[in-house]
Image (cartoon, rainbow over all chains, first blue to last red; front, side, top):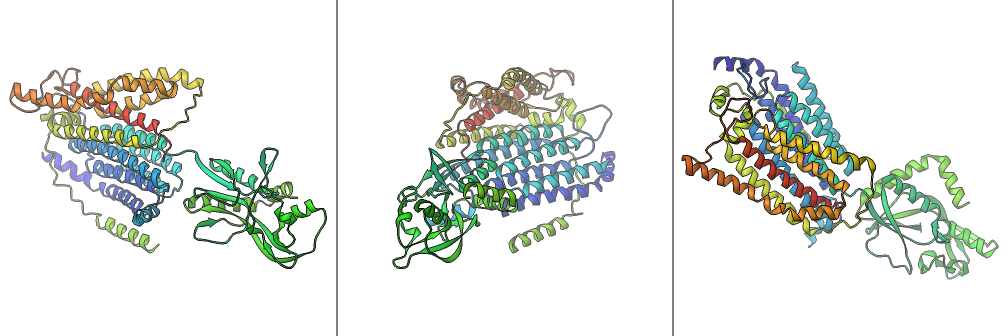
Length: 125
Length: 249
Length: 227
């Protein structure tokens, strides 16, 4: 157990810039969702946001060895975080596909891609 | 070895920035596919092989396929035209003219499919995309107008009971504006009138105008694309002048 | 423009504050590798956690996935269909796709069965098979694929998979006293017959995900080009 904590502490300080870069990619995704006016580009920015969160957690769980058991190695990357990430990716993809279906129904009815015009038409009714 | 991960993360940052600056739907989907592929490499180098396999198949390939199947690859637009001599006319079953040549090049370049519908009796239906045919128009709330395509002049013939060109009902290249005595015309129709009548007439110059196209309010992106194409065409002086000379003379 | 500028400024300030605030040195791993190997004899630790220690998460993820696919299949019926089926034949595609499709089936079965020895698992195997079936729709005309889709009753079969997993859980309770008891093969770690009931669960999840993705792709092809 002491071996484990000591190895992690020496590796911990290099990871700060990688965490910073993944946080920046998350914020690029948020900026894309808020400021784009075309509906399809908003959905693709949501995809970037979901994938960037996966990168952030994998960087946190990184210890140098992949989580398949090999003899004489004591420290592995964290498998608990990886198992959560499998669920997150699948649910995120189901979410994105279902949203695409609803966007298709809206665009088929109102015939425009612009988000402001859809709001105008919905407010007038 | 730890700098390798930082370099790869900067690559994903650059590819996500590329996605942020795209405007076309198809370009954005391809950029998302690239982002998914780079993310798979990052996840593999960071020692997470399960997550990398799931991300490669689900996050990159499947979403890419779904969006690619759903997006309209060839959009259909409707063009209504007034029949105008030298600009857009029916000759032996085919349509040809200066404006038709410009429109065909633009549509072929951007991948649109179109149908040309003639306007008879001045009633334009609600679902138009572009209206062409020697139009001189001003800004209005109901539609957009494009940049000027061809400069022209308004000419006045005769003195009393001036009949403006925008007042008559269109029935093909009708003989209305060749038989009217007092009329205000633009250059192309004047040329046709001179050609039909056989002799020149005394005329008076009024003002300078431009021919434009009318675009529908629904699709501003079409207007922007057309303006970009038009400015490129006008910068290329040689082809522009040769097209004018071939169609109008 | 002012709104965008302020948004960027706020985001940059938050990201600078997050520098050096991640204090991760007091993190203790709850599942140690030696214990996983003794208890559940599978080599892949992620597969052991997904299918043995945290199986409730997997059960509800399968349920959410089924519900999402049902929703997509129902709401896409409100859109008009694509009517312009041209049947152009390309010789390269026609000769290569039957060969490639058999390799794809083999690869996906391999990834699903050996999920507890090497990285893989049920999810990615199902998606690989589902998108491999997309290639078949390039070769055959659309009516044949409609007939295959309706005749195999895949929309009714895919709802059975969460049901079978629940039966597996209850049978663990009846026979051994605990819900989701892991009964199966417990051999040498590293061979095929080890790791408890990982093989059965992986195959069930692969079938579920395969039918879901095939339904989604088929319905999207039927109503394509509407966006």
